[in-house]
Image (tube, rainbow, N blue to C red; front, side, top):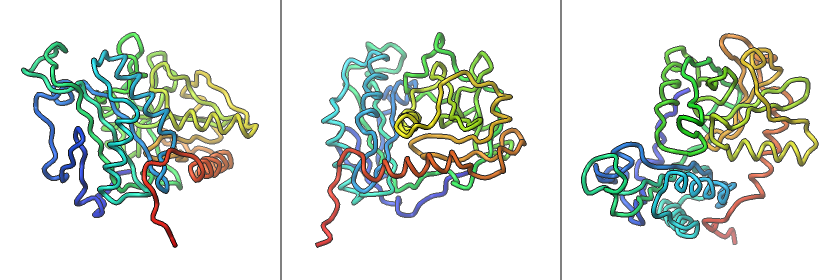
Length: 305
């Protein structure tokens, strides 16, 4: 799975600290903390008919991550929402849009790791692209990576930081194997997530997902668990071994970038009947209904009258 370039994104306007720049000239300082050491946090948002699904939980996670990294300044939710709205309106976007928020510690007056060199305040980047869900809804193929997810006693993965080398290395392995993405295990050998999404397996009519000890607290993952609770669907958070995943009735991935995506093959083993299973299809439909009616209005739609 490789994303292709969307010509609709040729003339995007990128918002950097409240100023809009054409994508070809937008840039941040080489002294910015994001450039110097990946010292930044991020969120992915999705726009549905002028509304961003689960916007406040995303902004809460952004703030929590910045607080955990001891940022001295963090923009308020209202400030960030204002810049997101400005960016979407400038690009005339109302639907089918993925937004990446990046908040760095800001610019340093000289290069170095010492956070006392940061005296310019944070850098907020709002990048909105025309982008439908990126995964093939007919099913994706995974391999298990030899790269393990980082344990919390090294770097807490619930800090949603821009330092993504761990996941990038796993994705490189998936590319080399001709798979769509890589399943990653934690240091105990249990399923953590893929290089980009959370993972659910279905066994005997029950939806199972791993805890978030070695992966971020997923917003879409939480929404799926809410849907299960609200609809009486058996579900559980537990340690999942690789062999359990191999013999699962169904597997699906969850994430803002791709919503719910069925997994039809893992390590060369067919999962279920090699197509999206009934639980995956049901949860996908329930998720779609939620995104149709829930969300935070950030841009107004043109009146049909």
